[in-house]
Image 1 (cartoon, rainbow, N blue to C red):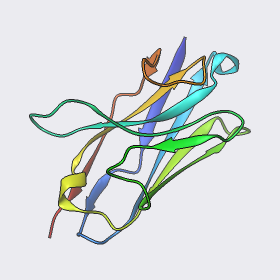
Image 2 (image 1 turned 30 degrees about the vertical axis):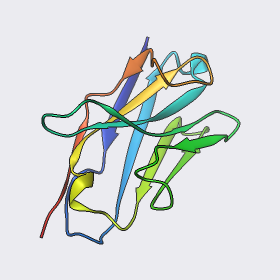
Image 3 (image 1 turned 90 degrees about the horizontal axis):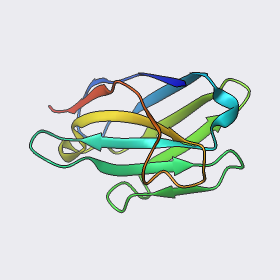
Length: 119
């Protein structure tokens, strides 16, 4: 069992920045890929970013060049630095983890943290 706890969400103005964190606990040795998804009201859950234990990353097209995912394996924590935020980035952001390198079908999810981009 892996538990994921997100933090760092909130209200930010367009053009601003936020950093999300996700701390993993439990069977952390089983985790390879960690990442983020988001879901806006009335929309399907969308892939945001992924990072493997070795540091390989990939991003969703809508966030490339603005968001950066990083990971501290010693702290079992993954971060999402979000810059140049837009109103369309408003969503609940979910942390995800998986034993493999892919995160298409995560085995573990966090409870989500709300990010609102509005003036």
